[in-house]
Image (cartoon, rainbow, N blue to C red):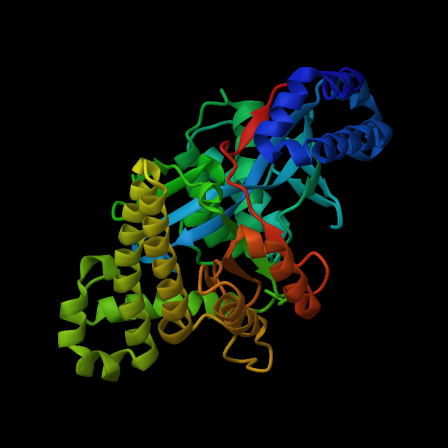
Length: 451
């Protein structure tokens, strides 16, 4: 629709309902301002987005897209070896105002980042684009074309609350956002969340150069809390999970420690590679083809062939899969409990598994700080401070763990509501104003929004 009409609709009652659904009532007005600012910038700077000859058509064809970030709830570094995870989309998202172009170029402007221009007439992989936004745009377009789907150019003005390096999957958010834009602008807009996620993963693996699993993209694309079993990588098993611990007086938070994710690709790649090196000792490709007993029975040989850290990471994998199952059982009990004491007991079981996951990531998986830079240990510090706080002030009514890929970025913390404000103040003295964010589960995945 035309920019002025879109601005008017963003002030409508229907828009109120959309903003409340995506962000909650307390954040609806701020969301409206963010959307309107993007539209106003698009109208004002049209000559940046399009050749002058395209202006009349472009000004009347603005569309709105949103993709959420994600929070990993369980299953740290298991997806890439076809394990089990529990994840959820969150209220922090990336929003884009988009209009199709008449040429094959993608013009991408995002607040706080340099403009990106990609010519889709050439979809070949470019080594100089590794690790750059250009690689994701070109890689996703290539995946669409490889599936026999049309691609074309578009201009987009975007703003993201999912900050790069925050551990909330900024890259996966962008990938599924771009995938849904291609799908809606040049296809029928009915591509499944799973296929959108798989396209994003392949672009990140092959074009961007990061060997990620599929959890981040699947959670961002699907919406809500979702349990995923990646045993079959082509058709993983997905099931929606009701996740709301606020009814039991517990808040889900992330603490941004301010670490830098730059130059960590090798550290991330080592995790799946070392797990797979253990599998290779048995002529297998991934750990899901084995079991913990077989691995431990052959520990001496594995130590010689793959090394001690690889063995420790393999042990983490098998135990983490079991923890995901235990967490799901606890959530099922919480959701089916009619008595408060039963819900609190199940919550205690859930939080115990969260703590065990965190301890395993620290001790076995070893993704708490980069091994080449042991002086930077923001995650270690945040975990230690949170554990100390929960013990001293909350009678251990809470939990914490590394969040996402690790090595730098964020931790996840479950804090009693009655202690949340004080916890935020204490952690901000170490990591800065606004370092603690309370997360809410967003029910909607990547989507084109109709106003």
